[in-house]
Image (cartoon, rainbow, N blue to C red):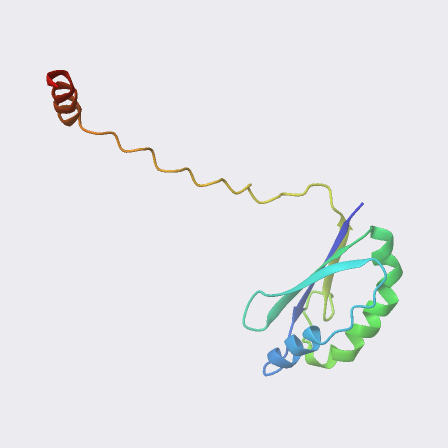
Length: 128
């Protein structure tokens, strides 16, 4: 079953672009990793959202993820409350919300001729 992980970060002032660039250049060598998004949630705050083949894939990749975190840890501020520099959560996907299906544009209805014009044509045909 597909799984997701979400990690919240707060970057030290002036390190925002370096942090973004580090994620753009990141090697995606984690086994079972399907896709990821770095989301800017405030001036200095970000969330990394990862999609994985399974929860086991996330658990197996934790040592590599910690190694990656260590490469940019100095850019991060402590989040407080005993969290340290990250606030990670992960779990199996239990529901998926797909976007609505696109509807085909309807063709414009054929224009109907005014009744008076149609009567005139019918009257002309009768007189011929």
